[in-house]
Length: 191
Length: 342
Ligand SMILES: Cc1cc2nc3c(=O)[nH]c(=O)nc-3n(C[C@H](O)[C@H](O)[C@H](O)COP(=O)(O)OP(=O)(O)OC[C@H]3O[C@@H](n4cnc5c(N)ncnc54)[C@H](O)[C@@H]3O)c2cc1C
Ligand code: SF4
Ligand code: FES
Ligand code: FES
Image (cartoon, rainbow over the protein chains, first blue to last red):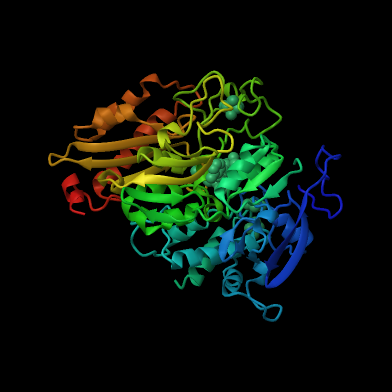
């Protein structure tokens, strides 16, 4: 696991004598601007969790293989583990914690509520990523973006179960809560 | 991870000179492959030159076809109306790769230059000629399910992982490259190399050359193209083998024109020119397709771990051509004459 400690950023590197480049960036996270000075190697995920104190996105694999670190970045679903924070200066990030907007604490986004209604989780570790991915996916389908299982690339998108499964394949759930997740997204899609 | 400096130049020319002048520098696209390799220690650059925000992010219709800026994200390219109608095989290949999140991040150029998924290449504790020339090839005796069956060498049996590259190879794409001496055009088929004695060399690009765009010619063939991918699970996995195919028929139902490229078989996307030649002018029925696949595999080298790729290639190639004959993707089903009426 990567460590992003403010004054020991070179924790795991053998090149301890080298100068460690840092850069100043601004991230808008769940509606609040955060100015951070980061080691250039810091991932967006570590910047969010270790520096901005937002532990909503989770570190599952740290290699792009599980989807638990998914957020909405400038409105689109995006991994944060394969992204260097310095490359996203000025980005607007919405995590699962900020999905419901700046409303009262405890308010839920409709997709979050649907996950509860449909038992779309067990341990909950993958859930923030699932929820952000679902919100991004619904927006993509809404603009007519096809998927691997779309029979006619030029027809309107019909979010069948097969379509939802394919479009959500980037989010793994070790607890196997897929049936509930599918139900939650089906309801969110208005089916 | 080695400490590194980061810069995001304002122009492509500045990016080129920044990398060109520093052997330790690398371009950073979407980062989905390079950042992974920084973490794994597979890549240890001292400087990253971020090109992902350069305004090379449009899909433009040209007289000859379409020009795709390198920073067009894989998801946007797949969903672009021009591609969906004119080059459905490209959309299909992109949609068969990675995940929704990764496609939102991955760039066109970065996709073509992603490195092999050979497990030993990614594990710095094992010998690998590609990562460390002269250290040996662990895949020869080790886990070989993804190994190459065509054009491999004693030095390296890795396969190229990109789906997009396979479809671009079938449809005669041209890669536009910016170097310190200006722009040049590289046919897709000449972009990647076979391993030979130097598997550490993977492309014909020199250090500091930047992919700025990919151009695709508009042809009746391209409009009737598709992509079939086989993998260990239904989604979110790299190809075991894949087939990009395009087909037009003459009035008698024989092949007027055909393009075939295979993924998961070689160090580069494999244009199946012998199979194309075997099918041209013939009715593409099952036995003709099987014979054409065998013709392409005449010099293939299978081992116990890769023998399964032979029937899989036959099946996937048959599936791709059947889809086109059935009218899917190239829709509606029919002849080159109908296509001519567009
Ligand atoms: C879990 C997972 C699953 C995946 N599954 C698939 C799959 O099924 N099929 C598939 O095809 N791919 C798959 N991928 C790979 C993915 O498609 C690539 O990582 C991605 O396309 C690379 O694009 P990028 O912009 O992120 O490249 P980067 O990681 O930024 O760069 C890759 C390489 O290209 C160089 N580079 C980038 N842009 C340029 C340029 N314009 N000019 C010159 N050099 C450049 C970089 O220096 C680097 O060496 C998967 C990836 C992950 C993590
Ligand atoms: S096949 Fe190529 S990449 Fe894999 S271990 Fe051998 S030399 Fe390395
Ligand atoms: S932690 Fe990012 S995909 Fe697994
Ligand atoms: S709910 Fe436990 S991993 Fe998905």
